[in-house]
Image 1 (cartoon, helix red, strand yellow):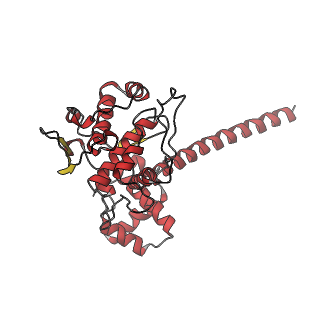
Image 2 (tube, rainbow, N blue to C red):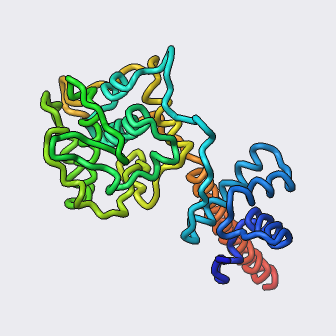
Image 3 (cartoon, rainbow, N blue to C red):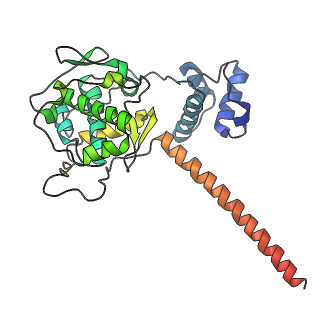
Length: 309
């Protein structure tokens, strides 16, 4: 059974200790754990829904840090793509995703890629998160597939699923070869073209096989490319992009050059991201308290010296 390194035992959250002790008492493996183990744990150690979500988040984070994947099956038929009144179809969603500007064009291209996975290929959240470079193919006849599923083409490039896929791969290739500055320059000055990007020869096969195709993006355009966005973020992004009531994002190149950065309003911290923020705040607070205690002790010592004179 895999174990967390001894050097890190003292820094682990109490939730992990609770889960690990329960697994040891039950004769089950805590690392890696199975879905059945988790189900049994939550059944025998009941808690409020928010507490259970926090426990699951911690358990998943410990698995990830130890190099394990805590694979939880998607509920049957739980597709993240929304249909019906109030939701944009795939063409409308892709048309609304900006391809130019910084960092709006970066987020827009990634989100359009996600919309293709969910809306055209009908992938679940977990499946979309795990699509890799070797899962995407551009065939000699120009057709694109993702895990053997055909990616359709549309008459207009703005709403073409295959073009959305190609546009995002182009960004990742440029990022890998030349870095963030080159991507920013290319997107900030990008002009919408009337030609299909999907007809161009793709070099995505040259990307490292470990490239994360669905990374997080912060408000400054940095990629959190060490892991895919969470399943919760997948749902949040699609809900934002498919929302028919949301006004279209203005073209940053229409009329004048963009000033400053365009911030997307859908950026929400996932449970993992929120936990990381809280942990950072706790650490900073602890350091601040320690510094404050030291300052108080030094002040009291100085006052005692002054009073003794």
